[in-house]
Image (tube, rainbow, N blue to C red):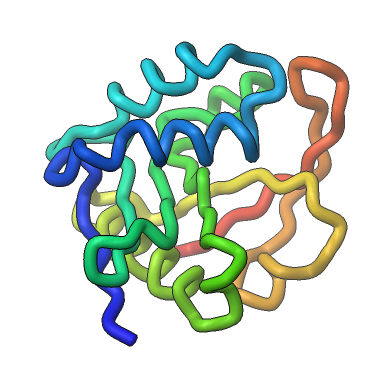
Amino acid sequence: MDIQIVNLADRMEYVDEVSEWFWHKWGKYQTKENMKYTTIHTAQHDRVPLTYIALSGDRLVGTIAIWTNDLRCRQDLFPWMTNLFVKKDMQDQGIDILLQNHIIKVVQKLGFTKLYLISTNDNEYYENTGWTFMETAPMVMGDMTKIYYKNL
């Protein structure tokens, strides 16, 4: 299987589908229009925020992004890996790791030495893929999340 990871800014024909995925997965406190607006403004080349997509041929199979902040109560941490998503029928094929490795290279090229993420999942996915648990923190609507980091 040939997977290509490209900047969403270079393939804007996927912005509606990417926005729809993000909204269904993480948009419970915002409108679909707000999510699309956010996605459009993370499609750029030269600075954070950035969004990348994984393609199998012309089929969108995954996403990942770098944001300036993904947790309002931790404005001191930057940048954040976010929106890691792989279509269900394409999971367990290593696309998630390809996306993470791509983001790490981009962040290193931008001059950063550490990358952060949040996760409300109770599984050990991020520990098993080389991330270090940092702390548990509150989110805006009261849910708790785990903060992870990776030294680059």
